Image 1 (cartoon, rainbow, N blue to C red):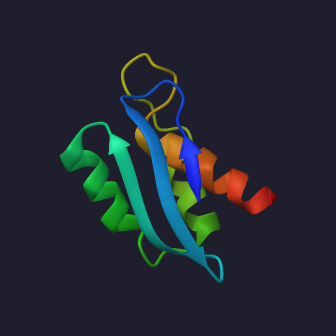
Image 2 (cartoon, rainbow, N blue to C red; image 1 turned 30 degrees about the vertical axis):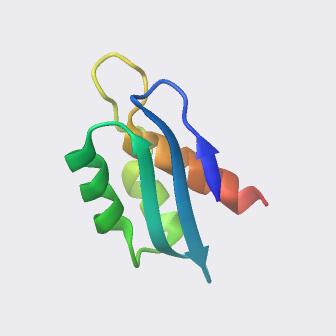
Length: 80
């Protein structure tokens, strides 16, 4: 799935989910080390657990962050 981010340095998030388990995550743009770290940490994690852990994380005064945007992307995935 492809998700266009809002309010972050990354422009989009591409991810794969199978049986409610995150298989892969790729951020386009953003802080490479941080986004690669987040991607690796959530691989193999249940979608709902990832949302619970990532939702609400802030980056400065942006009101969101790349992890928070991933949580939003996963929530959108669940609504499908």
